[in-house]
Length: 315
Ligand SMILES: Nc1ncnc2c1ncn2[C@@H]1O[C@H](COP(=O)(O)OP(=O)(O)OP(=O)(O)O)[C@@H](O)[C@H]1O
Image (cartoon, rainbow, N blue to C red; front, side, top):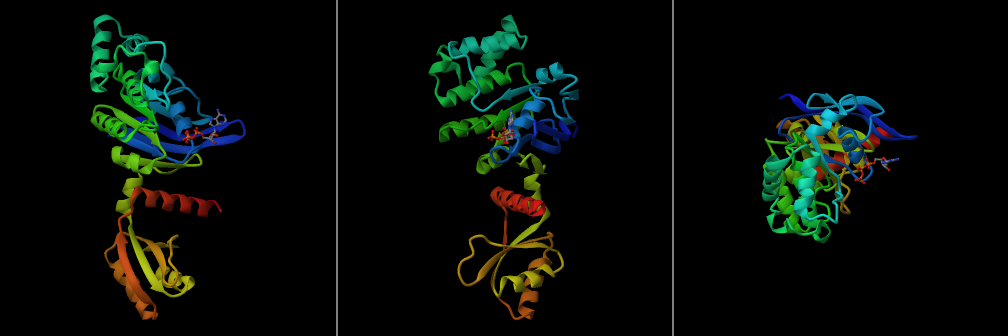
């Protein structure tokens, strides 16, 4: 798959503050990729550089083969950005606003009319075309923003927190829309809501303090086994025994450990024998095991695990 969006060793400083640190990724045609990170982790900064609003301090970015700095006009022709709380022109009616945006994107006459109608239909806006944008609900405003972004048929659509502030029905509608774009458009979505991003994205990148912890969090699931263990011995004893088992990568104490028996999470290579070897080693050392189960890590678990590992490495 050739890359439609490319970032190579991108760093961005705002004065003395480093907001993005040596970030690299590649996104292929038709992918829907989530960029997950807490507030202030650098998501918007990455999007602003990608769409030509900010210049990276170092490194380079490309969209559809165009360098975002050297060829920013060409980039803006193929990428559309919907910021969080996208501004609309409140004195314009929806239809008027969409025609205006179509004209800014170089579309005129019958072509503009057809493009506006298609976008309005796709976003279910035909019933509000004559309303002032100022009168729209949050959900409709978001749909109008996405409709204008789709005018001109951009190859890449960048959405910053597209479901923030929407009610559950509107969230589902926006999610369905995003999924309907898969294949025909490449979509990059920023969010700090794990459950939301997991539902729409086929790949999730995780950003923390400007550093990309993984370019494919969901793939991490396939690459290791996660076991939950309850064992009756001191933490140091369990750690020593379990860490020595071949294939075990690391052992952490479950934050919700109940009194008495401690619970542990064991990250291990995806080998069938690891669980049996862990039990055998503990039993041999005389440690009682009351639970050992494989857990399928959800995105929340992967996120916590990656961020914990990152802070341990930084310490
Ligand atoms: N114009 C600016 N000048 C100085 N610092 C900035 C500027 N814009 C962002 N920052 C800082 O850079 C860091 C990354 O901000 P950014 O907005 O990219 O994060 P984010 O992940 O999009 O956060 P949010 O989800 O809150 O929008 C933050 O610490 C922020 O305070």
